[in-house]
Length: 222
Image (cartoon, rainbow, N blue to C red):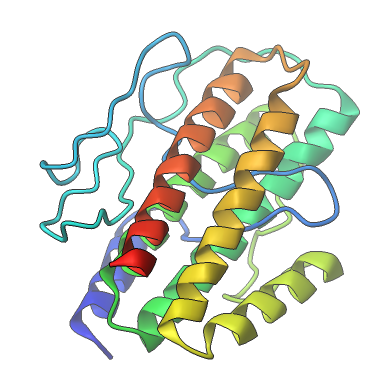
């Protein structure tokens, strides 16, 4: 396998379980480094220094989509049953995104997939922290790569994987589709949300999904 793919596997193994996903049935979320400062702070993208804030860096010139962060720091609040359902579906979205990007990183020599897949590992770590805090069952626990408990999520993953396997441009388009969906779902999930820790993660995920979309678009247009 390519060197960059081996690097991704090493980074994932060294951290939390690397999984990612995309909303399908329930309003859910995905896509971006959820661990910068809380919502009251301003996270900035540094396009010249790798691994800073939500910076792209890595010398690619097109943005690699890497997200760095600190973890969930805001206090716990309360969630409705519907918001708990959204939180669980968010974990599946993070798993979908991660698994899809790893598959594309294996197939294509495009570092953007490796870097964003590592970011999705961070995202799922934050979501799992929230799942534990609110006693919500993790639907991604013990699920192999490319396997999902929700049939709708499984169908979406299979469709995007088949699309992306056609060509690099198709894979980048699939990545853009994932991130656009994540942005829409995150904005919807933030409505009427009061729990500080969940709001922190969702807000940071939204910012990172926007950066991931930019990274995929830059690669597609270069």
